[in-house]
Length: 430
Image (cartoon, rainbow, N blue to C red):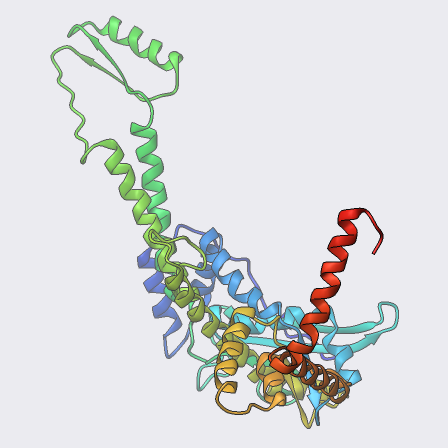
């Protein structure tokens, strides 16, 4: 078992504080510092903005679309039982999640410490650590993990042996992840919520006003005491000579709508940043089905890109790590099995095939392949039976249209029907 790097780092807890656009800019500048790149401010901000429900929902939806696919491995057209057991490990799901997180956070580094088969649980245990991103400096000239999170010291060179054999890394060295684009929307939305709460406190409840005669301090003190004991709502005590005016911006309801619309715009911005659309998470004003299908296609495109990104890591670095622990994954590749077929697409394909088949012959094997419907094992036998029934039907149709045969059958049939009616009339059995 390889000794984990994470136990040698001086890790510190995430520092949560009030986020602002100024702090967001400071985080970006610290990240891009060429002499001493610092990722602490950025990743502390990411952990803080993930408390936002809209961001957590949209990113979780994108991650789940990948995790809900079944990962498989094939070599020379066949599955490999030993690797299938590895992929059945619950730890694989966690590894896929962390690789996927590289899209949101940026550069991600994993250290696989051990892979072993556990006879008690009858599955593989994959012991791995996510190296804290604050300590990782993949920029050119560094490519290291630092003990201290605030300084880019080359304490652990993870791309050199022996560490290199146990490492999986994903993402570009200078990539900040898509959370850097979503962060301003979350920051502005929080500010709007705070202002809205203050607005509700000031104007959402009845406002009390008390007036007393000027220079009557004893009366003022009694009124103030009474107001405090009455309730906790806002109130104002002033003498009769003072005029108080509250100026509203277009009416209280209009002012409230401003906050509501602003927050909705921020949520839409988060959805577009993470998913590339809005209608798969929110209902639009028009709710047109055609528009929803366009947005769904955009999200499917994101899902396909995510799948290819994760597979590019699995088929290179993860396969190399498996070899380190004596598991041969060479000569094959990892892939995601397709989810249940979209029957709307199958119907569309079938309509096209029918249109083509009406003009030119279409091979049956192509139809099975295009629709995804499995071809039966006794296909030839079933095909012969289908053809026999088709010929019999054509013969019956031909006989029904033959006037000579109709003349032979019609009198006999008519006589039988007439005899049955006569017998029924007189109460005799036919």
